[in-house]
Image (cartoon, rainbow, N blue to C red; front, top):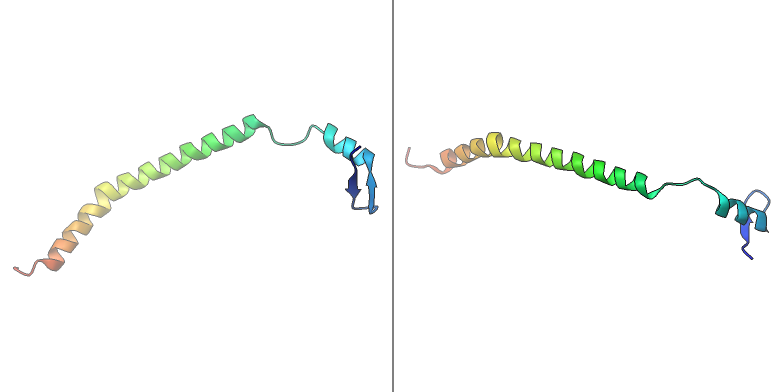
Length: 74
């Protein structure tokens, strides 16, 4: 027999256990898998965008600034 604690009445009841075990609420495996898949795809898109931004825009400019900063021959 399973007993659960009823917070409203401060008692243990078997009917609360039966209601909890027979309820159809909750999150399914398919829902969780879809959420994980969507987050992975969005994360990959964000990372590829950042990689493209830093690879073509930020890093060449940064390299030129560093070379100009340490080029004492000019």
